[in-house]
Length: 508
Image (tube, rainbow, N blue to C red):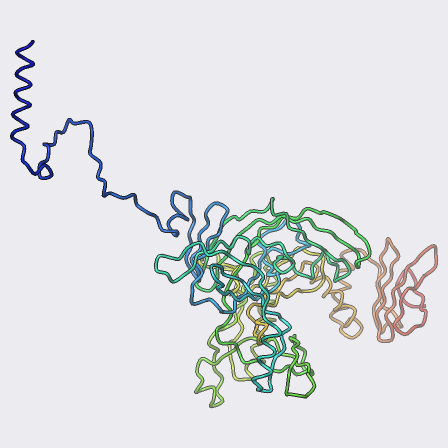
């Protein structure tokens, strides 16, 4: 045992003596079985940039288009391009589906147009809302322009903290969830006129339930970004503001919020002619120092520009740079399509008077085109609405700076055709024998009684069960009700009372 200890001690002394004097130059041999590894003190932990920290180890959905948008859990990170700061933008909504079509019809671009201008202030991006009512200055006086700018500085609607820069520093990353899930009256997706509004007699107040609402997805194109969300509201209905009809009615709608750029070069506005029937936009005009401020109306019109300006200047009829294509909803009854197409394209004759041809065309929704998006702001649609309303509705979105029409979509309410049919009878039955013949055929199929009125110069019809009589003639229109053996007349065109016989409907 002593000999073994002595041998080990001698070996240790020998190794020590053989070591070089420069201890730093010496390195121990590396053994693959050695369980301990020497740490490199110069090795540093990898540092993530603020941009990388936003997405590291998180489930992220990303789309590219007008802006790059990321959906990370319940946040909407938007890479806002620096070169778009100060540009005019538009925020609006379109309904995909809803629990109550009386508030807004699927496919309807029913929300208000919210014009926004994004600016950078310190470490935040603010969304300013320019006033729609800002006056115009046609006097050319620079002092008036400065005074108007100072008096109508756009208010801040939303603000967003800058979280990071994009890797190439061309964009600033902000969370815009508060913008897309805003519950104010400016951003609600429902039109002011709807079936539940009863042509303005019923006031509807929508209150967003944020805790029940959620973001479903994102998408983008070169012209706009979309945020698809499910919004839950409680709705109060009041009759002419005097008292509640219903309170806290639940309403859920899947909505697409759209953010897009307005034209960088505004269209030249055109003063509306009061002699022409058109929609207009009212402005106040400062025409000069010391002169009366005047009201001026801009015509709402399409930007129709010639594809060949040289030929157009020679007086030739040319096609426009961009045609107006109205896509017809696949839900519209097929027998309506030829009439819709003919009615819309008949306006081409009017455009030819000002030098353009083939401006408007009508097409059906493409069946196998995955790129087609009927909810896009760039697509004009004619849709079917299962509503009792007896008139067509138009969703018209314009550039408030100039009156340029950006989108126009038409809703064909289900009750529209029946009202048109009744109006056709009331207006032309007395002078158009085709109407009388059509009504006689329909009456024969229902076993209704009817005949001529006013000595054969018109037509009348009596319902066999209710005794209701409707009479049309060149002299008068009368509506009567047979009750307890006597005729009780309710309306007369010429103010005189005329009685009807219940067997033939002729006047007595």
